[in-house]
Image (cartoon, rainbow, N blue to C red):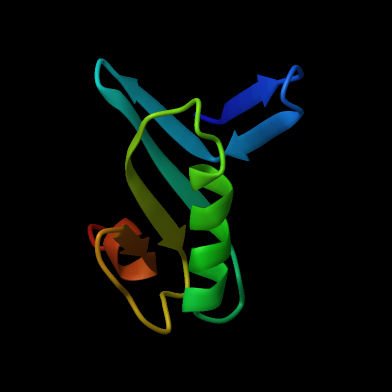
Length: 88
């Protein structure tokens, strides 16, 4: 479920791999298919892009990376290949 935000008046837009709308805001999740684990620098860049859109109330931000993460920090949520393919 891809989400897209476009505000031509303020020249702001954003594209999110998963955007779930709730009564009190959005939960956004970015999916990355890197050959190596996702780094905190990459996570911080994605968070900055989401937080730059002040017109959206973002409740939670999460990441999906098939090859995992170098580090994880709160308050974000994470899913990796082990989580996705655990039942196969």
